[in-house]
Image 1 (cartoon, rainbow, N blue to C red):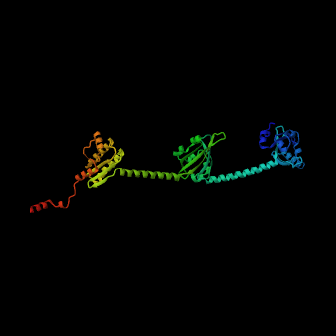
Image 2 (cartoon, helix red, strand yellow; image 1 turned 90 degrees about the vertical axis):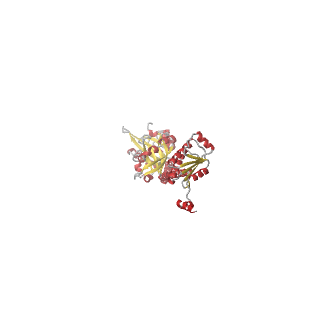
Image 3 (cartoon, one colour; image 1 turned 180 degrees about the vertical axis):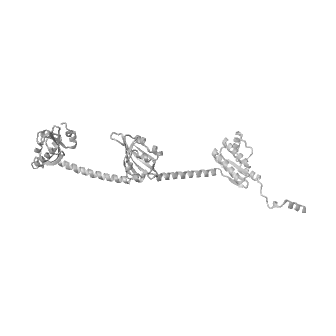
Length: 419
């Protein structure tokens, strides 16, 4: 049998009996499933008219249907009861159609299956259709509840060209473009992605390597806005395992990005404020009396802090008009070449403003270090303690005139002559 319609593999798959007949309905070929449908082996059917299997009460209908199939170019379906063996007649659903050859001969082909099986198949199909519709409605509700765009992309020719095959209705709210516009051209996502973010948004390499990826980028919406979006995506594969496309969800993260940027700005302001406060605390300037200021230093003195010491002290002298500046290094644990250089730089700056530097807190080990470094302390008064420095400064600063000494000199001499 050369007709593909009579392939045993195909017939066993759908449990339908396929047969070929002469114009009068005589079997010339039958598939293995004929034994189950007709209750007769395929070999026993050969040379036997189809109407011989039909119950007498359905004989007229069967012959009419076969005659109509021979005359018509369309398939003709009909249901008949077969001759029973004492039990309930078997009902069979048959579809007959004729094929006319080039020589004018006509062959009749039939496909038959149990009507009870067909009824069950239709009921199962209806049930499956109902379940499919219910699942479809559930999927639509789930997609509608996602606070972002649910999308699916398939490769047009290869991964370099991608066409959106599905996008949820939320695309309009988020991007301003309708789902139809999204589906209108390949690589539509690249069209609305900010040019500076297209490389970051393209996660193809990660998807191929790991099967999933996430990305953040900016979109240019249809009405001209710039929004931030976050995308979680997964790789889709063909039956053979080769990459076929991507699917994912994209949500609006503009508020979150703006909050992160605001937090970063506030964090930077706090850091700068703390830095300023620490700078002030690390270089305190204390007025002791008219014309005398003191700066006690505590902790290590690096280059940055040394520059702050110079800047604070010089500004303090300029603002207060102080004539003596006491620089106390009692709390500086280590004095090395860098510290000595900073002290000399400070002293030179103070001297240029016409003031005098008193360096206090010179411990024996500090003095030894200054000697070893051959530090030039010319013009710098040194004292062992801050108290000694304050005492020196009080002696160098003129005291205010008392009431007794405020009388004119001439009056004092006249009083002396009158004595």
